[in-house]
Amino acid sequence: MPGSVEIINTGNELLEGRTLNTNGQWIARRCSSMGISVRRITVVGDSLEDISSALREALSRRPDLIIITGGLGPTPDDMTSRAMAHALGRELELNEEALEMVRRAYGVPELGPAREKLALLPEGARPLENRLGKAPGILVEHGGTRIIALPGVPDEMKAMFEDHVLPLLEELSGGLIRFEAHFLAYGVRESDIADLLEAVRERYPEVYVKTHPRVEEGRSYLEIYISTLAPSSSEARSRMEKAIHELSEGISGRGGSFKPFRPTQ
Amino acid sequence: MPGSVEIINTGNELLEGRTLNTNGQWIARRCSSMGISVRRITVVGDSLEDISSALREALSRRPDLIIITGGLGPTPDDMTSRAMAHALGRELELNEEALEMVRRAYGVPELGPAREKLALLPEGARPLENRLGKAPGILVEHGGTRIIALPGVPDEMKAMFEDHVLPLLEELSGGLIRFEAHFLAYGVRESDIADLLEAVRERYPEVYVKTHPRVEEGRSYLEIYISTLAPSSSEARSRMEKAIHELSEGISGRGGSFKPFRPTQ
Picture 1 (cartoon, rainbow over the protein chains, first blue to last red):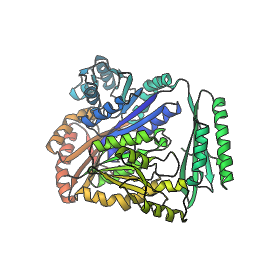
Picture 2 (picture 1 turned 30 degrees about the vertical axis):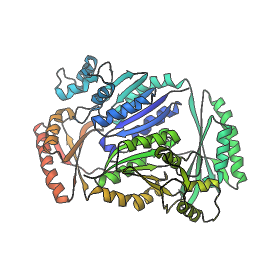
Picture 3 (picture 1 turned 60 degrees about the vertical axis):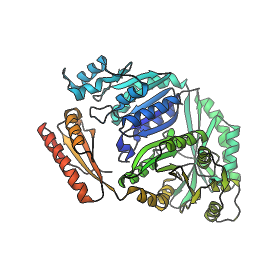
Picture 4 (picture 1 turned 90 degrees about the vertical axis):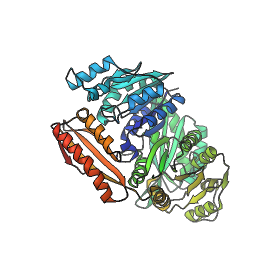
C-alpha cells in the first residue's frame, strides 16, 4: 500500500486569488505519478494560528508526509517555522547547521536579525539545503509523520522537492507507478452511462475511471480518464484493457462513439 | 466588518494534479475584490467521508459562507449533495423544484435514476438554477452559515456564481471594496527591508503590505503588493499614499529603487 501525503500551501496571495496555486498542483502531480495519494490540499493565509491549526488537523489524519510551501522568508509575515513549532508544542531554536547554510547563501559571516530568522527552526528539526535561494527548508518528524516545509518561490520549491522530497516518495511508493489513459466519448451524456460506469468500477476495483463533461464550440462530449497503480506496464495494460473494452462496448451499445485521446497538459 | 468565506473544491483530478484549481482562484479573487476575506481553501477528493469532514470542519470555524464546487453530476462518484446531508445530519430527499429544473434542462418529462439523482437534495435545501448545465446548485443554511454548492465545470460555476453568490457577497461586503497597488523594488533584498516593512505595518494597520521575491533573467527584485479595504477610492488613496511614501523613502535610503508596476494577470 503506497503512502499518503497532505499538502499545505500558505500565502495571503493564494487566498486572495492573486496567485494561482501552481505549487499545489505541481506537488500533487509528482506524488500522484508515483502512486502516492494526496489526500487533501489546504490553503491558508500568512497567519500563525491558521498555519498551525491546518498542520495540527493534517497530523490528526496521520498521513505519511505533510508538505508545506511558503512562509520561510525573512519578513515578519513569514511564519511557517514558528507555526510548525507551535503546532508541535516545541520551542524555536537557532539551528547551527541552518545558520551555516544562511551565511553561505548570503556570502557574509555576520547576519542581522532578519536573516538570522531563517535559521530559527523547531527543536529537533533538520534544515534542508536550498540551492537556489536563501531560506533553508525544514524537515521534522512527529508521531510517524514527516513534515517538510519548502519555500513558496516555485523554482526553489521544485529544486528542493527533487533534492529532498523525491527520496522520501520513492521510499513511500513501494515501487508502484500510475499508468493512465484518456478517451473521448461523443453521443452519450454522463447520465446515459452512469450505470455502465458503476458496473465497470465494481468489476475492476483496481482500475480508476472518471468522466468529465466538456463543451467545445457548442458540442458536448465526455472526457474519460482511466488509471491504475501497478508495478509494471504489462500488469497495468492487462488490467486496463478489459475495463476499456467494456466501456467501449457499452458506449457503442448506447449509440455513442469512444476513442483514445492525448490531453494537452 | 465584512464577512468571511471558505472554499471547498472537490475532485480527484485536483488532488492528482491533473487539473489546476482555477475555480478556487477565481472564486477567491471575486470574494477578495469585494473585501470579503477567504479564510481557507480546502481541496478534497470524490469521497463521501472526505467532503463531509471538510464541510464539518469549515462549519466549526463559523464563516458566513461556504462555497463548494464539484460533485453535483449524475455519476456515482458525484457525491457532494450526499456529503452535505451527511455533514449536516439531514436526510436526502427528492426536491420537487429541483426535479422540475432537471426535467426542463434535459427537455424530457421522465428521468431515469441517474438524472433523478440531480434532484436529491439535503432536507431544507433550496435548488439553484443552472442556466448552462443540467445539475442545479444547492443552497442550505446551518447555524448562521450559508453553504452553496456549485458545479465543477468552470463556465457553469461562473454563471451560477454571478446569479446566486454575488447577491450574498454584496450583502456581506458592507460596501467595502479592495483597492490595490503594485510596486517593484530593485537593489534591496527582503532581509534588508524586514524592519522597514514591520514599521510600516505597525503604523498603518489598515494597509496590507506583502513582498514577493522574484528572479528574472538572473536579476533579483521584489514585487511589493499594497492593498486596503475602503468605502471609497479617496479614502483608500489617502491611507495608502502615506504608507507608500514611507516605503519608497526607506527603500531609497537603503540604496534601492522603487517604482509602480502593473502586473499582467
